Length: 186
Length: 252
Image (tube, rainbow over all chains, first blue to last red; front, side, top):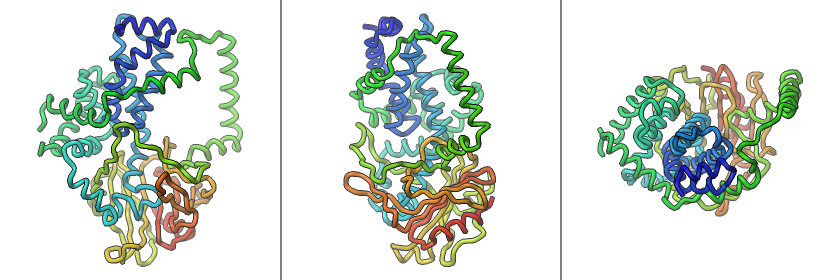
């Protein structure tokens, strides 16, 4: 069954149509959200919720438009919102560790975490990419993922992010500059 | 500088490493839908909409008009980044497929260097206990700053004390946060402002984490001057009064 037929089935209230759409789009959506949130569990929650919402709002999808871009816009927008809400706390967790993290935290007491330090020193390209992405703001990361991973154009990226095209350009400009420095050895 | 194609490849490879191709979200989605499934075209009639509007308005008015109601809701959600939990033991299951633990190193700056990186004056305490000194300042995303203090014997004694505080602009409640058992939480004030205080720490066990209320770890979180603060210390002998004394001396 193709996507169009699955959407039509779903619009008739047949949940089997959604299963087809999940199989078609879940991996790309999960990967895009993971790149933005850097959190696999959160990415799963977001994508699952987005599929459930797609089920509930499928009648809003224009019959002439494909499901994929419509769904991915919703997913990326949810990831942006979730990251913006959670970034502050994630940052706090990373900086301060858990409640007893002043002693055992990876950052605040480097002496106790030699293994982690060594693993960081030994980190290869993937870890460097993760670190580089983590240093971007949520907005910059979302713009990078939308433009370079999902390969949306600037107008589409701006629509997802709820900002002007010029703002997207600005995010991308700063992200590229940051990544240029961070990934230079690559 | 990586060109456009390189960026796509790098992102794709990175994402593939962490999200395997055989992930299947459908069972979870189907389970969710089975509990809340309704026809996509379900629409509320005018009578139902009116009833919902009346109930919502009454609820809103009760929040606005009745201070106890407002306070209860505020107590529930506004814990300055601290989330109450009813449990003192948390079991940790296996990691999600494809998930890996990666430590992101965060650079530490001097106070002067950190100040150049955030658009607000970094608050500092006017009082810290004798025997402690500023170690450095971490600057995270969204202008979150963590100021770290250590005991003078930090370099030579592994079991030395440390404290520090995180601060970020804004006082709006956020989702998530550091979990602390509700039995450990005490409502206190910092310069007259509501604050959350707790003593204890989570300790890691083979199958999860358990809260130890007698651990020498204290924490206080509050909002003031348009900032949200989270001050904690361990092995400091500060106690509640000492910690709050530091908290009350912190100002932008």
